[in-house]
Amino acid sequence: MKRIVILISGRGSNMEAIVQRCADEGWPAAVVAVIANRPEAAGLRFASERGIATAVVDHQTAASREAFDAALAAAIDAHAPDLLLLAGFMRVLGEAFVRPYEGRMLNIHPSLLPAFPGLHTHRRALEAGCKLAGATVHFVTPQLDHGPIVMQSAVAVRADDDEQTLAARVLATEHVIYPLAVRWFVEGRLRVEGGVVRQLQGASQLLV
Ligand code: GAR
Image (tube, rainbow, N blue to C red; front, side):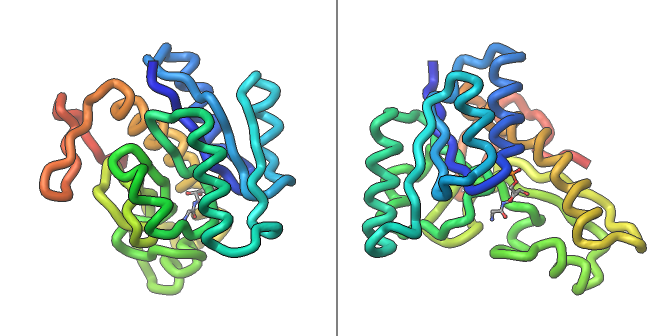
């Protein structure tokens, strides 16, 4: 049984989708803890109602970035995770934090990486006149929103889209691709070769 720890900053809808699919589909895994960097993160409530351990490591009360990263790592390691997931976790993590989890840490980012790392992805995609938007699940490396790509979803941009409508359509696809990518990980169906992720059964790593 693989132990999953999920980091959130707010709503936590991707975390919810993963908890739900893990239970519904009987993955060989369990979400053992949900940790937030904000005490008011709405997703904490869902997790505790499900009987999942929750914790808050508040970045605002940390003495420094390094102290925050160290406190966060301690809170995570208390649950001995096999897999660490960033699900709308909006803090940049330092290299010293990331290294010990490399190869067992995933993130979801609301753009077709390597396009638009960072914030305000949908606004930037619209401003650039992109006709295609989407989301990416990737292994985390010390570089922000970068790392071997496990799965992507692509969404057509409509002429009348604004940031909210585009974000909502992309988010609906996030709730499909993130649980699927996590399932593949816990079932041992992913291999990273030369920076490229292969799904060992040849399943499509693109949702369109
Ligand atoms: C999601 O759209 C996720 O892709 C994005 O934040 C949202 C969180 O929603 N993550 C990032 O921008 C990370 N760079 P959620 O809290 O409902 O899952």
